[in-house]
Length: 303
Image (cartoon, rainbow, N blue to C red; front, side, top):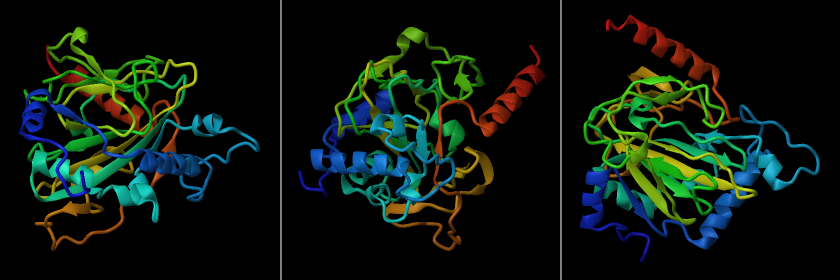
């Protein structure tokens, strides 16, 4: 395939609508994967400067130890001159996204996960809760930079959980095997409905913003599991999201990247908002505040 060819067929679009996700192989080749893995290590070694959360590595620290300081790099597509910035508009990704949500597409967020051995998994959640869209067009491209297996912390999803279009409540989990502070609860599917999505390096999982998903902890003996995430939406929908606090806001996010088609809000001033940062595992101050608010809302609801 050339870069401009769509990577999915009509049957794949039907599967996405039915299940809420679709796996697309060979989004990145071996050369591109090697370059992205090298750049992710360079980020942890300070090649992009002392961004927020960066801790200078100890002299002589090996690669696993250096990357093992961090759970995630947030907004790497804003690192000027980086591969992360260049690949956000990769035609092999954008071709799939336009098939799923239409011709006018903007990128609104990105993350790179450094899931070293011993790192926790992600609690079940829905991306749409944090990055709300008016038209349900949110789609995440989750790209494996190493083989993603159950042992080293692959994705886990509830197929079809996007279809009711319901945002389920969140609560504190107090589980050391899960990152951040809260997990989804109250949904009608049993935990037996959660299935792992194991994929080889270079494959991408495209999933709907309402899909219930998370990831397994990395319980492997020595296998890193890095994944690069790009989050897209229809350019026609306002996105009420603040990536600095990772919480909803009342302002349409002004720092988009148009990757396909036209911007129907072309008259809206665009500006840089939020800077890349590195975060270790565990809840942030914003996570704990959001958990407090969710708990207060739950107690305020009459039985």
